[in-house]
Amino acid sequence: MSKKIVIDPITRIEGHLRVEVELDKENVVKDAFVSGQLFRGIEVILKNRDPRDAGLLAGRICGVCTNSHFRAAVSCVEDAYSLEVPKNAEIIRDLMAMALFIQDHVVHFYHLHSLDFVDVVSALSADPHLTSKEAHNYSKKPFRNSHSHYESVMTKLQTFVDAGKLGPFSNGYWGHSEYKLSPEQNLILISHYLEALKFQTNISKAVAIFGGKTPHPQSIVVGGVTSVADMLNPQRLNDYLFIIKEAKDFIDRAYLPDMKLLSTAYRSEIKEGQGRANGNFICVGGYEFDGLTPLFSAGIIRDHNFSNIEVFDESKITEEVDRAWYDGDDHKVHYTDLNDDGTLKTEKNSDKYSWIKAPRYGGETMETGPVARVLVSYLSENNLINPFVDEFLSDTNLDLKDFSTSIGRNAARAIESSYVCEYIFKLVSNLIQNIKYYDTETWCKFDFEEMPKNTKGRVFLEVPRGILSHFVNIEDQKISNFSVIAPTTWNATPRNFDAKRGAYEEALVGIKVSDPTKPLEVLKVIHSFDPCLACAVHVIDTQGKELSKYRVKAF
Figure 1 (cartoon, rainbow, N blue to C red):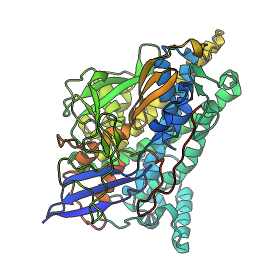
Figure 2: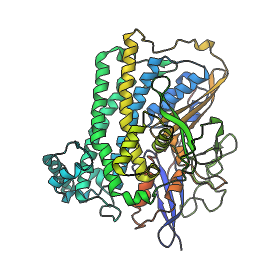
Figure 3: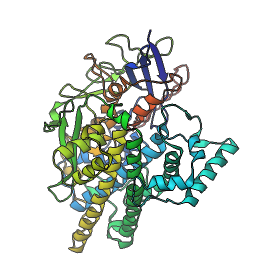
Figure 4: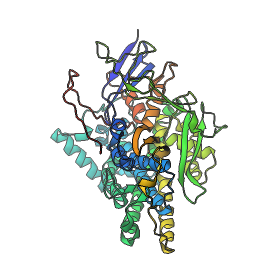
């Protein structure tokens, strides 16, 4: 007889996500349904707006991915008007984006995901001297690796326990059989967890140097950027570089070694393919370094066939709503509620069960994100990335397919963070060279009144969680339609009438849950994708009654 586990909400993510898994008598997941539980209406708000305001509004889709949506919306409008952005503006936009890559990956692992692997209570019994020795197994110069430092961390943890105020460490499944790290290994990662709190503050400053502020930067405008004074100020450039240098030090001496530690401790789990989806990967590439060499290569992989990298073709992308809470070609909202017992309506192939729409590439579900970028770029013989991948695989004795697992997704993020830092240094050098030879342009002048009254544009960007695409239709110089397909839309897609599972659902099928009352294995898989559900724009009470209506006049 099958059992059902409902986790609602999934915590340590952005937004509201619900997961229901069906277990067989051996507690193996035989089916899974993932549901986005809040409606995103920014596209509706954007209608009838001035296209030049698209970035400031679209940036509010999310409180984490603000810069990504901001830039995508602006670039989408620039595509509609065929505007060529000055190279300096592109570099500054890239510097902001790359800093966000680093921040997102580090914060994701340590503060959103690491507690699926780290038993906090176990760290209290660690030996600080043995911990220091253990750290040297994964790095020649481990980060903050001293006996006194580890003793300090243990004292801080013990203070939390004695006070009964565990804060972020409360409500964990401490002592769970799936935790495989030794007390010393747990202490290493808890030490880096605390250090990463400082890290995320500093790296946010790097985004703000050129963005004006973060979250919700405001320096990107249609045609370029406004942060000219920051670009021309040597001190501001130096401040940015100093932060990135510190970030790279943490990544190379803490983050990457921690991935090697996990890859060793959880090797059997990796080789079993736990958390592996269907092997379909999509990457649109981008971030050209010298006008020729992209940081990420574009391509399509199907069914883990690494011998055939297909050319990306945007015309093969479709977005369906068969089992999402929308109806018709205009995708109007059509919410059908839950079953009487509070579970999702998933018994019929036509039941709708998620606010997330269903993008497909050539009719297939795809996985996007760091693993897709690493695999496609590596197999495309991208010389910017391949040395970093080769070194990690050599140090861990893993294979390329091992990235297509829960732990492999984390490893891909760490590798990506390291080579993104290298790219940043080269970008800043390019910017300085431009300024040195009197190229200080940051905006392409255009007369909005002379722009086409009716046009359309689109953009495809690689952002921390994967592909982000924005589409705009402009009629009579107003936005008539705006559409967004975010990375999590690809990975958390519901199935259509064809019953094909998305990456989240496929990755859950086949895993064994040792204790259904503490489904750590389910959380481990879901968190490995770094879910980012878009923020809601409506309010309901617990009975589902409408509280208020708001009308915002468009000028």
